[in-house]
Image (tube, rainbow, N blue to C red):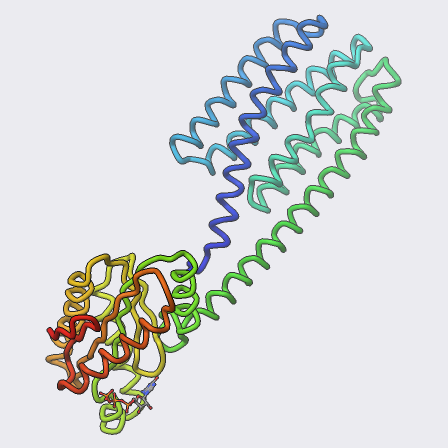
Length: 360
Ligand SMILES: Nc1nc2c(ncn2[C@@H]2O[C@H](COP(=O)(O)OP(=O)(O)OP(=O)(O)O)[C@@H](O)[C@H]2O)c(=O)[nH]1
């Protein structure tokens, strides 16, 4: 059965996989850029330190996330590192550009700054993403303002135009990334809703266990995959009498306890659900008849023992049949039903196996 917030977990897992891929690709991109700029003679010792450090840090974030399970921390650190690094480069490039009129390094840095917005909206939560992206943007806009008002001496008129260009483009990037994040959130919400609806459709509302629809779909899957399975059909003995004596509400409580006691004897691989009324069905992954029989006896015995000191008390009868992975599973279900009928006829609170007809 799907878990309650499975979709949410899946969405986080998806993000984590993307995050690791971004780090892997990031290392390659930085390496390529470093080589290309070096060959073109556009780097100096400061760039060499920066590129080297960025590769080391990206590898560190990768290891933190991949091998130490600290993905959330790694995401925040990546954002802080990239933001600080690019902002520092922008300021240095800006000063250089203002002094020498050479605008390559500021232009190159500004075109990389949007990666900060992408990292923020892709990996941080909504509030952190907005605050982080806007902080970086506002620092850049302050530089724009200083350039325009003449507070900062700029000798290259192209730089002023470049800063306006950057201000508008980066603002647009943030708006677009915000829109993408909203769309993604809406899609996750819809997936969660769809999975919850699917879960509700497969769940018994009173007992919170699988319902007949789900059990039937599992049995169909066994037929399709030619998979053997043991079918245990369980029925509460004289339940009408319990209802009649103690009332329907008390009857419901007895059913809830029966479910609890049955669950105590099951393994995680066994699928258990309500077949209808006071009848339950278990699809047990056991290979030998004796194993199915001993599982059924364990369940019956636990229910009887747990209820022994209860008022009202209850017992269950169980019919067991084996599906060998071929033919119609409905036949096996009928055999289990017949075995259950036999168990009732023989006095209830017992287990009957279809083939052998052996009791407990
Ligand atoms: N309280 C309660 N009763 C239910 C529920 N579903 C079915 N029942 C009742 O379960 C009773 C089943 O009675 P029967 O089919 O005659 O079987 P029984 O009394 O258990 O007798 P045996 O199975 O022969 O031991 C009926 O009275 C149903 O109304 C439920 O969800 N809650």
